[in-house]
Length: 398
Image 1: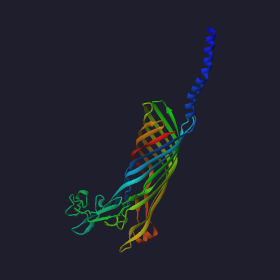
Image 2 (image 1 turned 30 degrees about the vertical axis):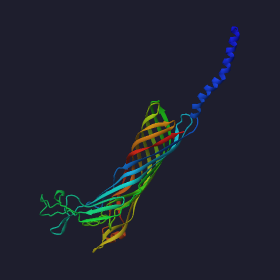
Image 3 (image 1 turned 180 degrees about the vertical axis):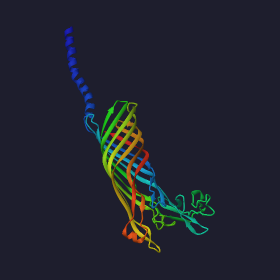
Image 4 (image 1 turned 90 degrees about the vertical axis):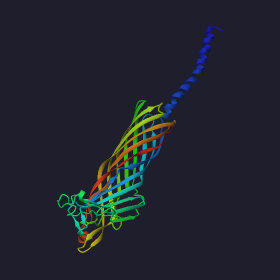
């Protein structure tokens, strides 16, 4: 066979092979391209546990009648669920995320302080004290409370070490055992919970090893629950009128806060082992306009009709509209189990600012006649909900 027929044969075989090779290259090139240019579903399901910083619900009835109260939600369940769609090309994804916190356990403690002592030798109350002194303690947790009264004792003759006719803290004596101990039931759950809905657009940028993601969108927020508070519910009570848990129960302030606004965030990633392991830090913030409402419902206060103490029904409530910030920081790791499926574990801290509305001072009517003409009023202050904890779960990108 000559050179010319051999050349024609090689050329024919080459043309015969090219369509198949071209089809393979086209298929290999179209695979990722088609995947990038279609909508892809994203799912996320995580759960965890957080605890909250103590809420200070202390109340001043007057300059001499004070309470110190703190609510500790020391265990709450965190749940997070998200559904999203990856947009065609490299346009990011749209994500709808729900995050909720639900109280599992609480503890509450309150102390009633009064600028008054008792002289047991003369059987008289002494009102010259250098500072308010502890009279009552009240402690509650799911299922029960314990309340104790221990009257501070001070004799102006025997105990006045500096001869200033004022009962100082180091001069006051307390009996070894309380004067009165009360016990009874307490709510098993105060039903404190937070709900957050975010609708956001996310976009990736950066390289293969060091990567980042920004996000922006809108937020809907809701907090509701109950915060107890101890208080003196009679002015110039001479040791009576504290919310000891029997006749006068602690104030239970119902909380209802709604808000909406804009949200934003930034996530930084460091990828290892061909993206099988990803360490990330995510910071989120939201600026919301909120409305906070608090209400004790019907309560009993004590008044004086001139000859005896008279219980009177009253109510304490307030509402405030304002702007506030939500902040969150999350540090964690994602491990790729199979293509698209990741295991995620993270630690987080965050704050929902100005979400709780509580009285810091109340003004009570002193007489029964005043109680008919007016009601309980107060000075209110907003408080933050601050949370720390962990979460874990799975995410899947189809």
